[in-house]
Length: 114
Image (cartoon, rainbow, N blue to C red; front, side, top):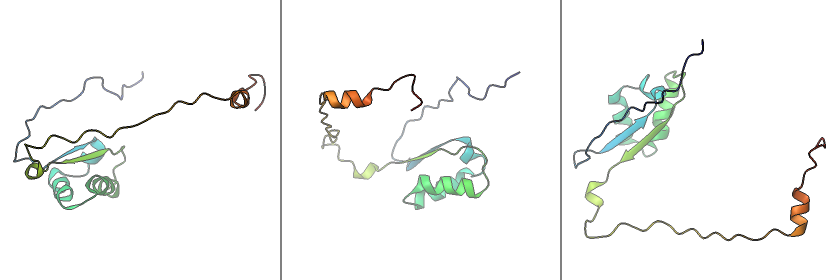
Protein backbone atom coordinates (compact mmCIF):
# COMPACT_ATOMS: atom_id res chain seq x y z
CA UNK A 1 0.00 0.00 0.00
CA UNK A 2 1.28 3.47 -0.89
CA UNK A 3 1.52 6.09 1.83
CA UNK A 4 0.17 9.57 1.08
CA UNK A 5 2.93 12.14 1.67
CA UNK A 6 1.16 15.27 0.44
CA UNK A 7 -1.90 16.38 2.37
CA UNK A 8 -4.62 18.16 0.42
CA UNK A 9 -5.90 20.04 3.49
CA UNK A 10 -3.79 23.13 4.24
CA UNK A 11 -3.11 24.32 7.76
CA UNK A 12 -4.52 27.85 7.91
CA UNK A 13 -4.25 30.44 10.66
CA UNK A 14 -5.85 33.86 10.57
CA UNK A 15 -4.02 36.55 12.52
CA UNK A 16 -4.51 40.31 12.54
CA UNK A 17 -1.16 42.07 12.28
CA UNK A 18 -0.81 45.18 14.42
CA UNK A 19 2.07 47.30 15.78
CA UNK A 20 3.09 44.49 18.16
CA UNK A 21 4.13 42.20 15.31
CA UNK A 22 7.71 42.69 14.22
CA UNK A 23 8.05 39.69 11.90
CA UNK A 24 6.61 36.38 10.78
CA UNK A 25 8.61 33.27 9.93
CA UNK A 26 6.86 31.00 7.43
CA UNK A 27 8.73 27.72 7.23
CA UNK A 28 8.36 24.02 6.56
CA UNK A 29 8.80 21.29 9.13
CA UNK A 30 12.34 20.84 7.84
CA UNK A 31 13.14 23.99 9.82
CA UNK A 32 10.72 23.65 12.75
CA UNK A 33 11.78 20.07 13.54
CA UNK A 34 15.28 21.27 14.53
CA UNK A 35 15.00 25.02 15.26
CA UNK A 36 12.91 26.06 18.28
CA UNK A 37 10.68 29.14 17.99
CA UNK A 38 12.90 31.20 20.28
CA UNK A 39 16.00 30.49 18.18
CA UNK A 40 14.14 31.29 14.95
CA UNK A 41 12.93 34.63 16.31
CA UNK A 42 16.39 35.56 17.58
CA UNK A 43 18.00 34.75 14.23
CA UNK A 44 15.25 36.50 12.24
CA UNK A 45 15.51 39.66 14.36
CA UNK A 46 19.27 40.01 14.09
CA UNK A 47 20.21 38.74 10.64
CA UNK A 48 19.87 40.69 7.40
CA UNK A 49 19.57 37.49 5.35
CA UNK A 50 17.34 35.89 7.97
CA UNK A 51 15.66 33.26 5.77
CA UNK A 52 19.04 32.08 4.44
CA UNK A 53 20.55 32.00 7.93
CA UNK A 54 17.56 30.04 9.30
CA UNK A 55 17.83 27.53 6.45
CA UNK A 56 21.57 27.13 7.07
CA UNK A 57 20.93 26.71 10.81
CA UNK A 58 18.37 23.96 10.20
CA UNK A 59 20.71 22.19 7.79
CA UNK A 60 23.59 22.54 10.25
CA UNK A 61 21.47 21.00 12.99
CA UNK A 62 20.93 17.91 10.88
CA UNK A 63 17.53 18.44 9.28
CA UNK A 64 17.00 15.59 6.84
CA UNK A 65 13.78 17.07 5.45
CA UNK A 66 13.38 19.71 2.77
CA UNK A 67 13.75 23.20 4.25
CA UNK A 68 11.68 26.14 3.08
CA UNK A 69 11.77 29.49 4.87
CA UNK A 70 10.37 32.97 4.31
CA UNK A 71 10.82 35.83 6.78
CA UNK A 72 8.41 38.76 6.55
CA UNK A 73 9.50 41.83 8.50
CA UNK A 74 6.97 44.56 9.24
CA UNK A 75 8.07 48.19 9.21
CA UNK A 76 5.05 49.83 10.84
CA UNK A 77 6.79 53.08 11.70
CA UNK A 78 8.10 53.64 8.18
CA UNK A 79 4.74 53.67 6.40
CA UNK A 80 3.19 57.09 5.75
CA UNK A 81 -0.62 56.71 5.72
CA UNK A 82 -0.92 59.85 3.56
CA UNK A 83 1.35 58.49 0.84
CA UNK A 84 -0.19 56.09 -1.70
CA UNK A 85 1.55 52.74 -2.14
CA UNK A 86 4.09 52.56 -4.95
CA UNK A 87 2.83 51.31 -8.27
CA UNK A 88 4.14 47.94 -9.45
CA UNK A 89 6.99 48.06 -11.96
CA UNK A 90 5.92 48.16 -15.57
CA UNK A 91 7.05 45.36 -17.81
CA UNK A 92 7.05 45.91 -21.53
CA UNK A 93 7.06 42.87 -23.75
CA UNK A 94 7.46 42.91 -27.48
CA UNK A 95 6.53 39.92 -29.59
CA UNK A 96 8.57 39.66 -32.75
CA UNK A 97 7.48 37.38 -35.57
CA UNK A 98 9.86 34.54 -36.32
CA UNK A 99 11.72 34.59 -39.59
CA UNK A 100 11.39 31.68 -42.00
CA UNK A 101 15.01 30.72 -41.24
CA UNK A 102 14.34 30.47 -37.48
CA UNK A 103 11.25 28.36 -38.04
CA UNK A 104 13.16 25.97 -40.34
CA UNK A 105 15.96 25.53 -37.76
CA UNK A 106 13.47 24.78 -34.99
CA UNK A 107 11.86 21.87 -36.84
CA UNK A 108 12.90 18.44 -35.60
CA UNK A 109 12.48 15.25 -37.55
CA UNK A 110 10.52 13.08 -35.14
CA UNK A 111 12.23 9.97 -36.51
CA UNK A 112 15.79 11.23 -36.22
CA UNK A 113 18.21 10.29 -33.45
CA UNK A 114 19.00 13.96 -32.70
